[in-house]
Length: 191
Length: 378
Image (cartoon, rainbow over all chains, first blue to last red):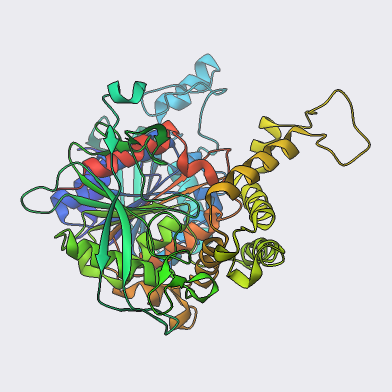
């Protein structure tokens, strides 16, 4: 099971979806073909925008850092931020905006508390580099890493309700010690 | 003559003219008793008549979108980099119609045409026309060509306004509306620039209140200044600086009012050239059509309500350095389309050239258009 499978499972057929940082649009394409979910993607990167057009999904070339002013209140059922949270400079306003424009938000990110990351720092003293975090510290789009407990604390502070959580490592769900054994976390939250 | 061998050119083309004898009531209330529309076509209309794309032009261009004229091989269509075999708008797949508009000076009925009521050129008596009027006239051309529904209507700038208007006035006749470097309404600054241009023309002693055709003169000085002003607004500050900087035309500053800087020389050249082929009465009317364009006006300024009748899918494109019709204006269009749950994609191309970027061959822009057209089913 992949993170995309998890997200697909969480989105009911017929929902309206906004996918923030939608990459090449493959999630939107799957949402449409497998769940009949119409959606829009937001993406800043030229190459990704082109891929989205080739994938025949709606893409809006906008900078998430500028907020979601283009979208009216509650105009979507679900706003998705898939593995993009860590690359956002101002995360709090964006998360609030997601729950302004949508009833629910789905947020996924690489867990910085994953044991492999902890070990790399603890033993080698280097910033972690892995499948989930493939970048060198000086050449990464990521600016704000967090762990599961960090994200949950932020949700509590913003008054968000966590409706569901899925933690994955190597495509398998993680049940015990998720903050230590989970490589990727996905949350379904509402205001 | 190399175009004849260029496989990505539609080759030698000829302008055509369609005559419409039924009167056309204009938005102003005036009636054109009859009119002609100049147009060109490229490619073949398929048997299902489902592959037609209408290309609308901007202020100073014409229906000559692509290819060249056999007797004028250097007269290449204004969007030849976009339209042709294997180009983003592929004439191997689509039947492309380049349409002129009424009031133009390029072959359609306009101020220089003969007014059937007087037997003399219309001149100042030619009515003020609007984007809605142009689209209504083009709809008759579509009827004439047997096109019930366009696969796409596309344009840049003023052409984009027509593409938008088509989607509003003939929702069932447009499958895709491609709106490039557009605005849903002109700003006060935009109108201000247009008014300076109009004043330059109307205060030219050769203007004669618009009835200059039978006097054997043209208000070339006014037209020239109008073009110089317009040209400044088409380019970004950076693009101008990059191209001309403060480069001098002569050895040193002249301390007179001759041409010191390259930019002065360039604008004078552009103005001179324009004044030889463009009609002043047409220029006045086109700038008014721009000023009057405001689809939200009938809906209390609410663009979302104005777009409620649209049924097309949309592609909206803007360019970051376009300060004439800035990306913010395109985002307003996108927002109104989202409010109406239209299928829409939006591209904001980080291009330095300003408003004119829509005419240039930026690979990101052209690849995106190509991808979009390839996904239009026929």
